[in-house]
Length: 228
Image 1 (cartoon, one colour):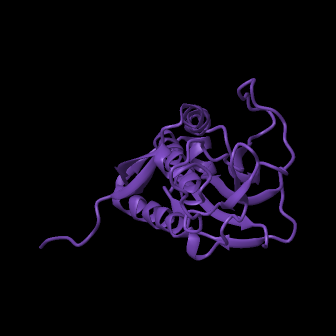
Image 2 (tube, helix red, strand yellow):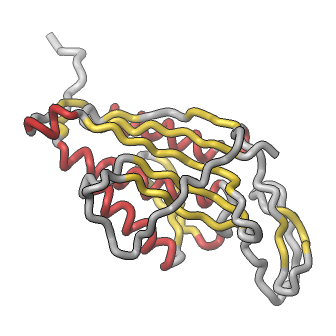
Image 3 (cartoon, helix red, strand yellow):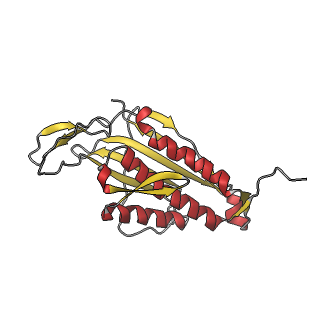
């Protein structure tokens, strides 16, 4: 008789860290694209998790995200918060929270867990779809777009900017991002990292997103947005 059970894959601590690290890289790129922090033409399409994804081609951003994912791969981070801020005022507009919980028994005793890769991928797909549809549950980032002469010409927000043709100068990006990385106090981190305030938003609108569970690590996700 054929069994209806789903084949399970062995998930180790190292393997789980690799899954979480890779997920954060793609999720961060998706947030930057879908929230309009960088222009559409600076991203390239790839396929991952059975979905079309977009990755930045900006070398500075690629290096920044790569440094963070390396720390995640090494299991050094408890939480990452991707913060989107106004370039003009440094006001925090959104905080994308990635909280990571690790099975203590796996760390202390070196045991492994079982869960199918397909189950994990389905959970990650659900998160990526939520990020891609963020325009439906988050307000647009209504920061003004300006030209090099500081003339306001429109507002940021991928679905709200009216294209202006025959321009011979670039638009100035008016949102910036940073990532807050939370670690234990005794963890060694890159010397370029500095202490930061938590960049909180007063009385934010909070949206809880899906989580995914490797059976070794649970990644919970939410986003806080300034009420506009």
